[in-house]
Structures are given as structure tokens and as C-alpha cells.
Image 1 (tube, one colour):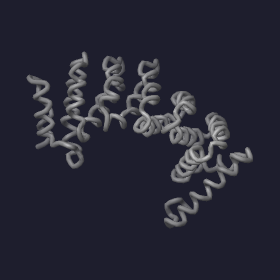
Image 2 (tube, rainbow, N blue to C red):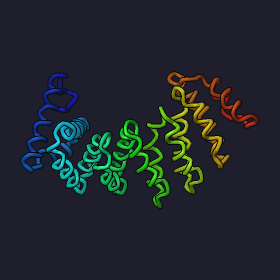
Image 3 (cartoon, rainbow, N blue to C red):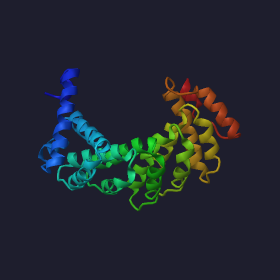
Image 4 (cartoon, one colour):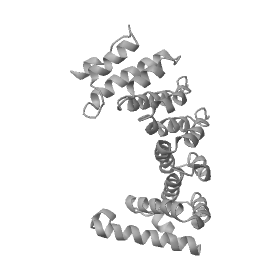
Length: 263
């Protein structure tokens, strides 16, 4: 039976059982049951497994070496779902103890399957939101990586921190403004738009963009910001008209293109 076919109390019992099985496996060194959870076809079983792995690491200092050893082993598992779940577990740990799991993200970025790579992006988002200093320092090392997909993934991964603290990630994003790959530049513009519609962020974004050298990219970002304030009008902190007024005040004389989308 799928995880969400269970009742709420049954789901709680299932999670408790998974936690007990993972703890027993870490103590015994027999990881077969853990691997089954990490490889489960049900996304929510895998999620439960990586969440309880993170909790066990936090709660029991004595188990930490065994947890790290298990994740290291699973990073080379032939099943991409196991590798994906291991990276997500490392992401839970990295929210407060990044240095001990950073190598898993180095490896995950090179994974041949997109799912573990996506787990890196998701992990960087959740870690960067609450543990930004080491995570953003790590991310900066990959901003000029020779692999364009890694540059794009890192750009996407640091977005969540920027939704509350754009000043933390705009200097990093600025390093991508002259990227030679359109796919990376398009992701950069998208991320700027996703940051700018959040409460208190637009003014900071406009101020920081003013120092960028790539004016065509800044213009594209401004158009995306205006468009986002229409597309997400039910969630944006400002109306599209208010966003346009702020943009026009900061960038007088710019060519208008997107305002018609609101009508």
C-alpha cells in the first residue's frame, strides 16, 4: 500500500518503523533494509527514509560515523534512487553540519542521472536557506565550472536563500552575467525574477542589478521581474504597476515591453 494510502496514524507508525530499522541497521552494519527504503518506488517512503536519517544523525552523536559511512557507500549504488536519497539525506545533515557532507554534493553534481543531480539542487536550496555561509561558499566554487549544466544547477540551487536575502546571492549571480551559454543566462534571469517578487526584495534586487555590466541581461531581468509580478499577482508583495514604478525610478529611460501583459 502506498504511503499516502495509509491513515495519518498509520503513516506516523510507518515512519517510526523506518526510523527503528535504519537505526538498527546502522548499529549492526547490515544496510539491506535501509537500501530497500532508499530504493523504494514510493517517493514518500524515500523521503521518510532520508528525513529520519537526518534526525538520527542529529540526535545520536555515536551514530554519526556510521551514517556518513552508509551515505558514502550508497553514493556509488547502481540504483539512481538510492544515490538520490543519499544526497537528500546529506542535505538534511548539511542544514547545520555542511562540512561533513560537502563531498556528497561534489559527487552528486557529476552523477550521470538527472535525479541525483536534482537532489543536489534541492539540497542546496534547503541548506542555503538556513546555513548560508558554508553552502554559498561551496556554490561559488562551481559558478565557473567547465560544465554548463553544473553552472546552471548551482544558479538554480542558491535561489531559495535569495527569496529572503537577495543581497547574499546577487553577488554570486553577478559572476554568471557574462556566461557564454544561453541556457545558463536564461536560468539566471529566471532566478532573478523568482527572487524579486518576494516581500522586501525588489528594491534590493534593483539596487544590486545597477552595478552589473551586462546591460542586455539586466534589461531581460527587468522584463522578467515585470512579467513575474503579473504571473504571480496573487502571491507577489507588490502589484505589477508598483513594480514598474520602482523599476522606472531606478532605470529612467528604459524601453518598456512587458506592461501590456497585465491587460
